[in-house]
Image 1: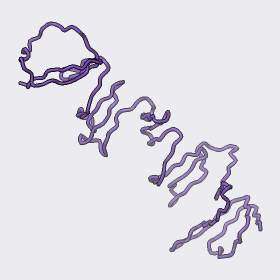
Image 2: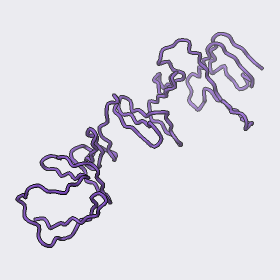
Image 3: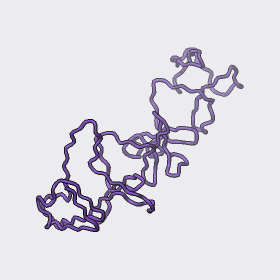
Image 4: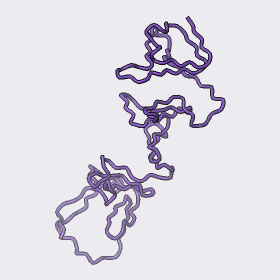
Length: 239
């Protein structure tokens, strides 16, 4: 059975009783409004059941096809509201918005980027690579490895082409513990109180300074590599 209703139909909940509509096809080339009224118990506005029984068919339970001859760019395909306030919606461009969080039991996929509204972007230019950017796509500041931006956790900070390990609140540098440390670039001045070790070497030294001469017997030796050469650097107890 097929029922065609031309125009707009409004069906108050009181007029919908079991058996009012029989299985079949219904074409409504206008608008359908279901006015449930005030309810005090569970009563779904729309309940649909279907049994799919053909493994060779790609079934579609619901299909909405909009012919967009002309519309505003912010036009919405579907919207769900509570008290007149939008809680979730899908625009005609396929942008899904939710007022609350999104919970997924599986993989959440994006074709390009994840954006925190008005803030940071996380992008994947290729497999196995990530880009972090500010909203203007002009740079990135800091990635804190912890639940709060405090000195209790470390962070990675961008300083031009350099990467710094800072405290989570950016109040100072954070310590690094590693099995080995490899350097390949030349050392540059870190300032009056800093220390920087580079990966280059030279075969001559400058003029003698005013420090004490090394004792004959060091406490031990630090094993390192200068290029492909394994070396032992003596160390002494601090004064």
